[in-house]
Amino acid sequence: MRISFDKSDVDINKLVTWLSEESYWAQGRSAVIIEKSIKNSETISAISDSGEFIGFGRLVTDKATFGWLCDVYVDADYRGQGVGKAIAAGAQEILKELPKFRLLLVTKDAHEVYRSVGFSELENPDRWMFLDKGF
Image 1 (spheres, rainbow, N blue to C red):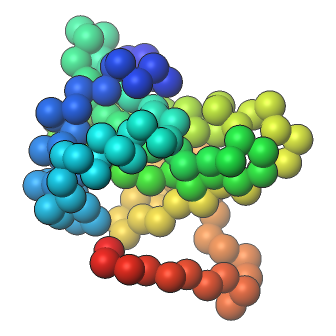
Image 2 (tube, rainbow, N blue to C red):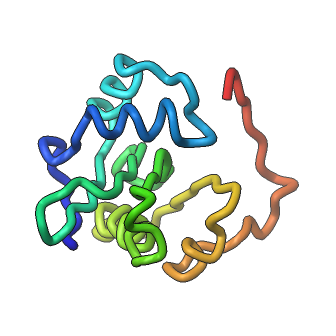
């Protein structure tokens, strides 16, 4: 498997199906919105040794101090094989030249995957707030 940051490696048709039909967080998200989100973010694609698009993550970042890893999805046939970990590590790779950065994500069920690559729960969750419109 290899990780790619090249947007041309994103299989948009497969990604639209994954996000809009199979994910729990983006049900019904349109292809237009998915394409716009890709255009305006850094992409992390997981490509199998045979060249198949098997996983995806999107990094929203200011490229100075902050990043949000989102839309992480791994093809069902490749789960449990380290693909999600590689995508999360890829997000950190994009930000590695920054002297300090904060990288966030939200997950319902993959806490152990992300812990294994350095993520932890918020130390002071009472300081954090969010505005969630339509998710």
